[in-house]
Length: 103
Length: 143
Image 1 (cartoon, rainbow over the protein chains, first blue to last red):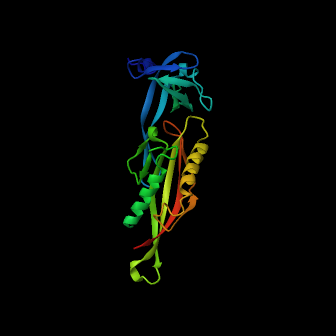
Image 2: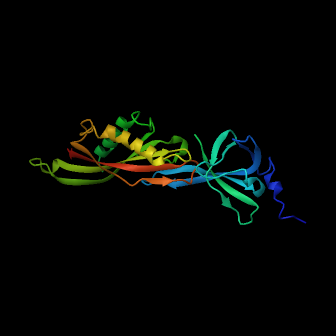
Image 3: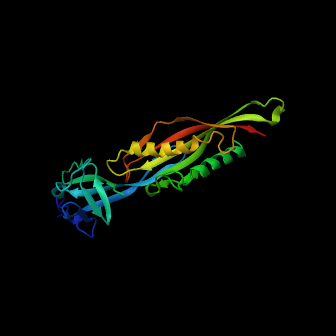
């Protein structure tokens, strides 16, 4: 029987998840990195083509991340991102953390 | 629209290229979507053009034309940056170049700033970005 409460398989490195380094602590968690396409109308027929990076994190790991102006800096595949927001999932098993790239 | 509007846009691109934080990212009516890595960026586009009365003594061959031109400035920032300050800085650089060219290097009779549109801010992408359009009016005689 499939256990719907056990979501750990989705968060295994090499499955849907990947390692995420928390820069300040040096700790690594595994989380799902969603970096889907996002485009923006900027008027005059010229659009922006961008992505909307976000992390899907197990509730147990969510306490490691802080959102906002001084949000946690994480490193994913050598790119630094800041956690800018925290969106609870209604299942309360995961949280979504929108990220923004630090250039 | 006339061929002259093309040369006006091209002249604006020419004088801005390399002289602002946008560097070489200055385009004439670009339509290909930009990517975040390309910002800051400037895109020059023409708006409405009004054809005025004939120039006295020249019949229908010489008409005074008034072309509105937009110089869109787009910038990005890091999380928490004061993105409007970054946008203002680019706009000031654009103005410092264009506002000192009252006849756009003799391309037109007069070239005047007419305003700056309300800035737009987006915080949903990989980096925050903002853009606005500085507008100018170019008056020239069609020959």
